[in-house]
Image (tube, rainbow, N blue to C red):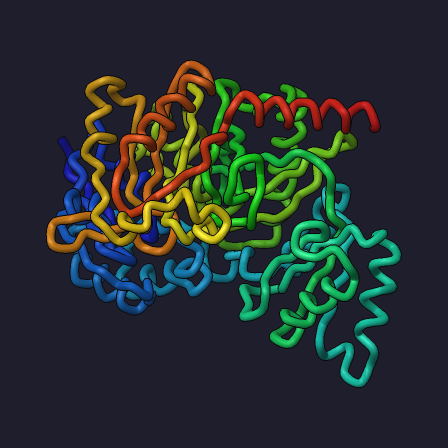
Length: 470
């Protein structure tokens, strides 16, 4: 078997799933090098060389790559921070090792305004109505009146977004984060003091995620996924990084149709081709340059946002069911000749287990938290042992977790992703939930309704209602 050296820049379970997909290669003997945000148990066990860089500083990562330059064939990056900071540009310039992620100039998630401007030029029909507020335009002027006039046009149904990842309150949604104009304006000003803010219309619909692999020249869309942003069951509580996600056997979700999927693909390709036409460098968009959040309205598709990275958790639903050797997929991306990716016709469900204070759970459900288990070691052995029962139908991916003195400890974010794979969503869900139940210690908890029949039925019913209105 040919030996391949890969450096994975790892933030959490998403990158562990990438590393796992690489290590399962049947064609190559993969030597894994990991630059890790923390001492992840999976990475610590599997890596040939492993370094912890808590800041994920791109200069330190580049130094690690330089030290192992002769043994590395490519670098994989999943986390947005290094991508935005230009990790690819730096490593390729300093070492010549190909990096699988977009170049700094095309990390479009850095600017929500740049996204809206791009869509307005390429696919205006998919853009929600929006208005940009630049601080320089309102020096000595009444910004409150301008905001309120725009809210009149939107009938208050608005979403407030800082242009860049900010020090303010971040994205705020009418009905979720505020219920009055005064509250909305307070949220707006918390972001406006740091820079430009965009206010766009709130769209009623059902959301899907669509992303694709790209060699710079070709965009290869992957099947639809759906994530669960709210912390608690029944979509209650604050938005989080994503409590779980699912994929159906088909390439589209249960509340969508084959025709909806065709519209998604047409729109994704339209955005990709329109964006690529502006770029002279054929390799600049290598990686996952388009991770699209679509909103299906019954009258067509709107684009909520795009990111230039693999989705977390959604990419975890897809990596384990890629039929092609994932090393080959990556090599083709790096070489510029990826023209297709084959996937199994399987359903997958991902459930995240998280610490007691994540999403404010301990405050909302104080009686459900075993306080004696907080900060105790987390036992993954029973979950991992389920592979004897389910074979490759279950995967356990440590995320925000640290190996200390031979024991696993959950940190502050999403600690463990448990993926179930099945011939139906319900089969995959049962495997994922069973795996989650076996994990003890750390006072961890998880949503129990990810991909449940009841939750999916609500989405189906809502979509039918939207179509009738159209």
